[in-house]
Image 1: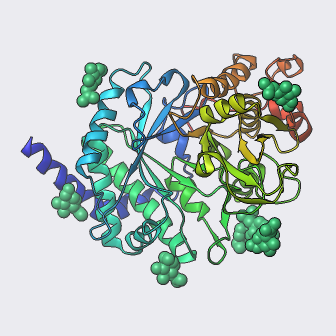
Image 2: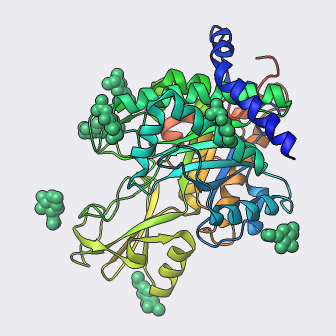
Image 3: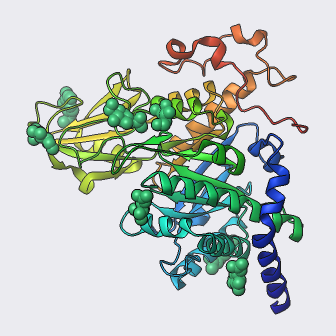
Length: 440
Ligand SMILES: *[C@@H]1O[C@H](CO)[C@@H](O)[C@H](O)[C@H]1NC(C)=O
Ligand SMILES: *[C@@H]1O[C@H](CO)[C@@H](O)[C@H](O)[C@H]1NC(C)=O
Ligand SMILES: *[C@@H]1O[C@H](CO)[C@@H](O)[C@H](O)[C@H]1NC(C)=O
Ligand SMILES: *[C@@H]1O[C@H](CO)[C@@H](O)[C@H](O)[C@H]1NC(C)=O
Ligand SMILES: *[C@@H]1O[C@H](CO)[C@@H](O)[C@H](O)[C@H]1NC(C)=O
Ligand SMILES: *[C@@H]1O[C@H](CO)[C@@H](O)[C@H](O)[C@H]1NC(C)=O
Ligand SMILES: *[C@@H]1O[C@H](CO)[C@@H](O)[C@H](O)[C@H]1NC(C)=O
């Protein structure tokens, strides 16, 4: 054991020191991250991921992995002083529970160790410091590989919410580069499958709140990261004094929509298959100022039920127990419900179906949920995964990446509202989630 550990240290020091050479050799040819790195792993249905919040008490052994290709462990944190992952005894307990649970999963979904989270506070500053110096990036990277291997993860994920200026963004680009190089190097030396590298990102490729305008470095992302996971939710919340849909697919009046965000990433030249779209299993709540003014944009006085947040299963219970009025917004493709002075924004089966149709129509890499334990008897998770299956079986057997005559065949799963209007039939049947060719 000690010997293996020593060997590990030697490998790492080597990888961190020599990564640069490896990368300059590679930089000259085009790089197709998802294709080359996750070959054989990308399934027909694309990436169907979900985060497991280790802190809620929802058992990892209860995850039904028939609905998911990847399960993210959320979260571990870097130390504010050494920048290596700070694995507390609570973390060890949860990491062991998670690693143990994977043994009972059927199928065995891939697992990804997620670092960070949306807690705010000091964390964005710690990431900023870590990313700003070569030595701290190396210590961080080194420790992520060690922890990921110790607990048999298949990959690592960064959830930095959010880089706060252009220098954070450029340091993040360096971090991705050095991280990927270290992962490649470690894999080639240990002869194991390379750990995948993913990152949760802002819903759009540019960020303008809380500081100056700043943009993610698309080149670094495209070259070094396997995929990004735009967080297509939290567009509105009880910090605002009016109601709003927190995860609208479209918005006729503002850029706070999933279509805007995903469009911005594509417009910035991130390959669509590297985009894994976020889907919420929770919703924000408000108290209405006047119960009879209850549309989108109605004035509010603060948080509603659940201190401002209900998870999907609670929303369904709340609606039923209170006989709430349920509204599907056919323009924005999301739901809200209200009763008395309570107002809730959420997604349900119909809007999730449309969003997954949208993801496929834009040929995205897949989708992810925040978070496991919030669904109601897998209703939403299974709906999302069936949308994938349904369209896939519509495609001709060979070649799979070309729309065939089937494009005129009516498919009962292609009736997502809004899609025909926005994309037309061809796009819906287009080359979506195609199994990557072995040679590219
Ligand atoms: C990598 O981490 C180990 C501890 O796990 C440490 O001893 C070693 O010095 C680190 N290497 C680098 C290059 O930071
Ligand atoms: C590990 O998993 C087994 C079943 O797969 C279970 O019986 C056992 O309690 C688990 N142990 C821990 C520490 O979670
Ligand atoms: C960028 O933001 C970080 C984190 O808030 C801060 O420490 C740093 O000084 C900022 N850099 C510039 C150039 O403004
Ligand atoms: C959204 O629009 C607002 C107002 O026009 C603008 O300030 C902001 O930069 C835009 N956000 C993004 C992500 O483009
Ligand atoms: C993001 O910002 C960059 C730099 O300011 C700009 O060129 C680009 O058009 C913006 N993209 C979007 C989608 O707003
Ligand atoms: C909501 O807040 C804005 C500024 O934060 C204020 O101008 C507006 O009057 C407020 N509206 C209500 C209905 O309280
Ligand atoms: C539920 O609300 C509807 C109208 O929204 C009303 O017709 C019905 O009587 C209500 N049922 C109960 C049990 O309150």
